[in-house]
Image 1 (cartoon, rainbow, N blue to C red):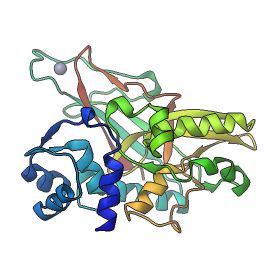
Image 2: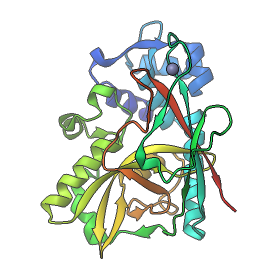
Image 3: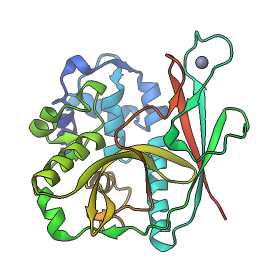
Image 4: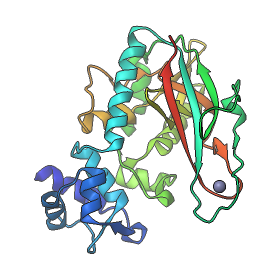
Length: 287
Ligand SMILES: [Zn+2]
């Protein structure tokens, strides 16, 4: 109960004007694994609601309670892929596909893929497949030296929360509330590393994982001439959500071989005129 109250207290630091009460109790159970009795407890703990709930609130609750959801299942796969990359790096084939998300869009949709997804096999594939990317990673995850990780001590109390779009890049919100997402945390890591005189950059790319890769933003440090991903927040979140442990994925593990850099900052990887599209990265091991 205390855990649930702390969770609701944290969520309440997100201003109410950023909430949209669109999720019905039936939807919360079906999609996010949150049963009616949990919703009752959330309401009793003071979670803002109407007859419906805010999707962002419930996504966070679902993660922190370890409820079964597609997101939870995807993250279990990341841990499996990390374990695999710790043993033997294997090449992966990533198939990018897109579907039109606009109900009004008439006629055939023209999609174009970001140049970073090249070299690219653009042979037309099945259905909505736009092309294939081969990732030949020879990197094995490596521990970042402790004295470097110690430089980021001021970020040790920041917790991962999915945030409404308007707060995702709000550094003030992170500093005040100690809550953030990956891109915000990456920016803070870069700031601190720069102040410490380290060579650092942000990266946007994919967490390469079977059966689906996922876009992600992280920081990279150049250590002994090699760019190493540094992501303290993701393993911290995966520990809090009981998806993995500190033994398997410590915060100071650089997940090289799991992260594949595409660009410096987040940008659309598939363009579709002015209309929205849903992009997926179906991924398999090449044997
Ligand atoms: Zn379309």
